[in-house]
Length: 406
Ligand SMILES: Nc1ncnc2c1ncn2[C@@H]1O[C@H](COP(=O)(O)OP(=O)(O)OP(=O)(O)O)[C@@H](O)[C@H]1O
Ligand SMILES: [Mg+2]
Image 1: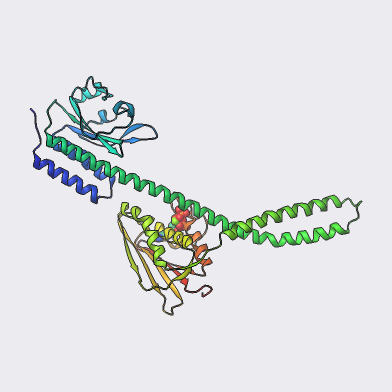
Image 2: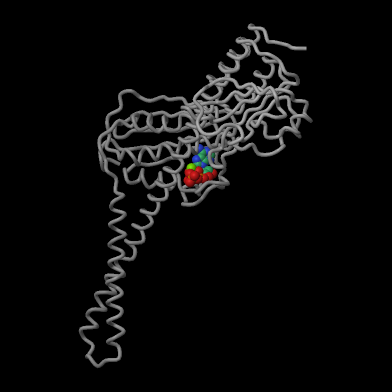
């Protein structure tokens, strides 16, 4: 018996998919709704959604509805079988002979599943196929114009979701690489500067005494050659130390007068999608009459990103992060608070969180807070931590309004 969908049902299902596309932050949830909605609307036995993995050139299964485990795990689906190269025509493709159509890679499995007909809906972004929705039917049938239009519109919505998800993923990767790089660099810079300062003085002493002893020993002395080596190697070490100091001087802050709210807004924009995906609500309470203060914009942006990432990582499910700015009571500095209602910090950890490489996270590097500490210190500022286990954490940064005003 042939069953066609009525327009009311098509509209209802399309509306719910479309609403979810524009409101949901979970791509998986939307794609599940897409396969179920498409199958139900078209009275199909099931439907699957595959996204093309450009690295392997295979269509990977991302969502499925109504098909057996056995059919779903039948094997890889390579790109060539489905489409070759670019395709310019959007629109549904009807596969009415499952047994012979070359686009069906597993005809035997399809037969065993009771599939007689398929409807392919390519997901296209800028002329490239990025994925495919395939709908399965137990008998051959005709499709009404409304049904095909519905299916194509669903495919367009779906391509939009994938595009959005890919964009978010790219931003996440970019941000992560950037954060890792700057953190490593600035901690290396501080380490280098620390070592260089410590070694510079003893080295100067060795060089001084070495040179004067070398002047005093007679040419035939058995110590002469040894002393020459000491002086030569010490000069070499001094060169290396100078280079290290040079490197760390480059990392000195470049401060310009700026409104700290601007830097916070920028950090929040970078993390916007991350917060949305994690369903963490960000509350801003930024004072609108802050004076401009001398800050290194890039370094301070890194500071706020580190605090905000820690705050979001401390929230296991849904939660909220609040960021507040204000001028302190005597007008000498600004106060920036980053507060979360996450897991909090145990007393045992409280003393250690600013130690380089201390991390309670499986994938943490433990450099976020030490880097923040270094940067805030360079601005003659201060960080205070208030945390209650199981309640949340508040990081309070104080920055002076004028340089050296601590
Ligand atoms: N807002 C917070 N809530 C709870 N714990 C926190 C918070 N901020 C920091 N911590 C604790 O301090 C530790 C050190 O933080 P830090 O940012 O230095 O390193 P990390 O976040 O573990 O790793 P990464 O180098 O990726 O930032 C964290 O592992 C965590 O235990
Ligand atoms: Mg961190």
